[in-house]
Image (cartoon, rainbow, N blue to C red):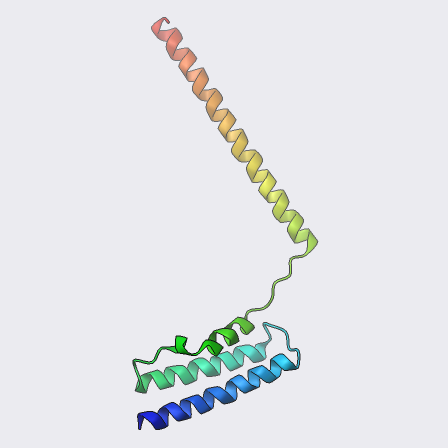
Length: 120
């Protein structure tokens, strides 16, 4: 019975992965909802199979990870986004340097008052 389940499981996954491969060959971009629906089918098939075969590890099938990566849309950074990130980073750097200098000055000022108070 276990081998029949495994055969049926492999057959279902093969059908799903062939659909995904066809989408890739047709030039469908990453992040397309079609990939997400195929990945959901894979997840449902795997969870159904794991109920009958609890020691099954889905990491045995690298195509699952490839399909999952196809569901994630490709992020393209625009110039305004890059400029805002660089600007924010520079602002944060200036703030860190400013706070460090202010802390050093406060410390020096505190020590000067302490030495004046004790008479040195």
